[in-house]
Image 1 (cartoon, helix red, strand yellow):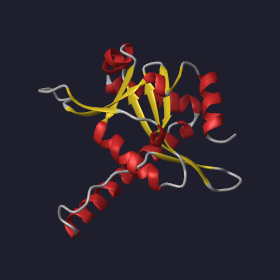
Image 2: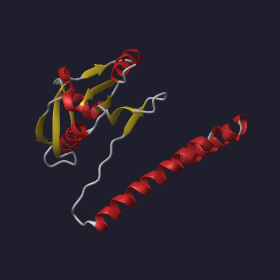
Image 3: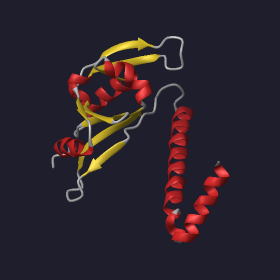
Length: 176
């Protein structure tokens, strides 16, 4: 399969010109270097201060192009429908509980709003972390998914079904 995919890429590159795949591979190379840098920095902090710190990140910070000021920060998640369906049908969204609590603490310190943006199957869920309450529950004992979960009622968040509606929601969140 991989050989066929590579052969197809080469054929398309010849037909379309060499630059068709170069930007993709440049991006992937930079992404791998970014992951390596994050790992090395985490490892360095652990070496310098054993057991004293944990490392976390926020996935995206949106800046206004004209003002160059931060507008919002986002924690991005993508959940398969298979994983999310049972909770969804019960009117709930499950996210990692420990991360939810850390993001709530971080949101209180940020001067810009911090949102979860969760792509669930064909739905989008958006909510401001410091404005949503969740029930914390340890779930899925004895499986690889065992963890503390933040159980969030779907009635308390914005659930979006299509890109037209998503644009309206995001426009409001980003102050446009």
